[in-house]
Length: 440
Image (tube, rainbow, N blue to C red):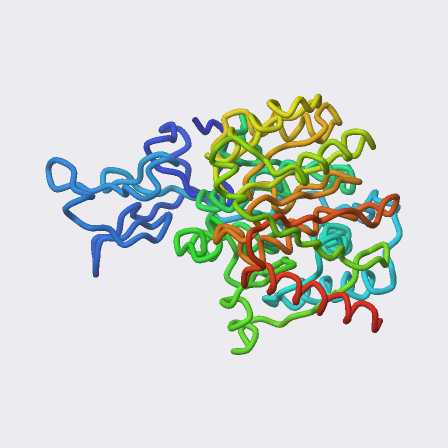
């Protein structure tokens, strides 16, 4: 329940959730939660609704698409208050004292220019390029001039990892973290870090909107979340997309002139991306289905354990998690490990355990392919030729390795029955990036 007027600044909430004392304030504006003409459409998520599915008694309708974020219906309006930008201007907002490389600094200055000119821009930077640090100068400029800023990502793990870094860099600035699994109450803040789903609750709020990992599920190809982005940003706001693996839609937007673009092909520590080694194993998939792992995989896991080398072990399907875990246990390997997948109710705790060195490795689906950093790890991918692993996903998985300047290299091992098109494309793209990096 919203109890303070500031909770509505730049936000859109069903009038059903608001006390009468707030609804009666002159600053509060309303618009229909469900538009009836020219067709039935939800004003929050933009979904076109089928009347037969959206039907309520007495000729009323509701949105069945975004129902998990509380009901939108024709019985209530969407209430909002225009964003007032009620923030104290801070001249020295950035408390981060790190140093950017010359190439990072060039990108950082470009980010400032993009924000000032209120442009829409794509920053294409390889995994481990230091994209977060390249944002700091732009965010500092926005904070100094009283702008409201949002960094959104499709993945909750990315948001959770990003929050303390932004909080440390901007210690004097109000910051809030929003995601579906958080139990922290909403608070009006100058910097918002949230999942892209949370943007559906905002309306013309942000002067600067940054979308990290823009090419990933569930954001990529999701009209509802794209609608939410366009609703959340101010009409003349600046938009910055970040990714290491832009999809065809983004590159088409660049070709059409709808997005400007910059490219950083080298990691912050100057080392190249690790190139995957492919190990072909006949009958790999059938073996995993039968709770068995090839002796070469088990030998590598034992070797990693003897070296006290932590790693991520990727599998394509949820059903593979238990079979691989069983195979490792049956092989007599002594280690602290766990399994994780997107809908795992203990996902955040397990990722936290890995982050705090309480686990030797995690067996995971593609949910950990990007946005999370475990310094000094190696990566093993089982059934890398499975269709679940797109070339972009494999590039992101390989990018988990060598991110630390203390250990800028490491193993990236793809176990597969065939050197499929996705694997070949991944290898080709990494080599291309490394050639560009070597030319700098």
